[in-house]
Image (spheres, rainbow, N blue to C red):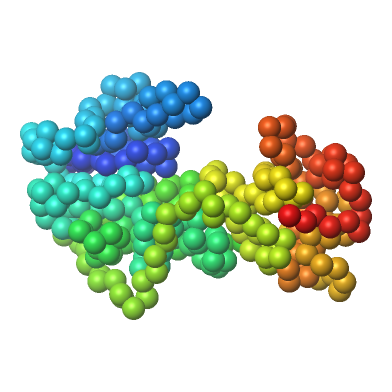
Length: 316
């Protein structure tokens, strides 16, 4: 940092995406105090495990506190005397008594969407699900109402239509890590404008639920393709075939319409990919499939296991 004293940042984050921003702040020379969440039970054994941010802090001896008790957190933040708050993929509401410790323009939120579009906890997934032609990242002030703050800086990127959640979220938080450093510098030098969001343009990216991963062959093929890309990390996508819940780990989309055949009909097999008609007449190609309690297999091996062939119907 060019100034005499390192700028002090209280960083709020929990996920691997938070780490992209946190590492950038550390690389740029900021003094950082991290606020993160306590260990949570994970896996089949429900073993208590730290989140990615806490694990990183422990391994790299970075000062952090858990957000179990906000009064203790408040005291620690006051002792740290921060210049900025930065929030990235935190997933929690920060109490007003914490927010009030700094003025609005020094409480900054890294949000992976073009606000006011896709406020809320799942902006990247809804960007993909909705077939948006562009995405982006916004640095806005942190206010009581979720993702409603004044915009300091925003940058957009064009989408090809092939991006999945894992790729796009990393790209957007990478962009956000650069933008947050720019925003901090703008505020420090007083060279910034706070732009109010247009409430009439706001849309809500609700949290994703496990059941959102379900699809039917009666759905549009392109929408199933979007679901697979949006839910590649969690909850994956699944359907019901012959009374079994079948997970689809990889599929492809073909916009070529088939003139005859009901949804679920197997129309072609190309290598290991099984092409199936969907509700709008276009097709999806099942590439990696998993039956309950079994290993992931190719689409071809899957239908062979069901003793099915071209012309048969994959029905519930």
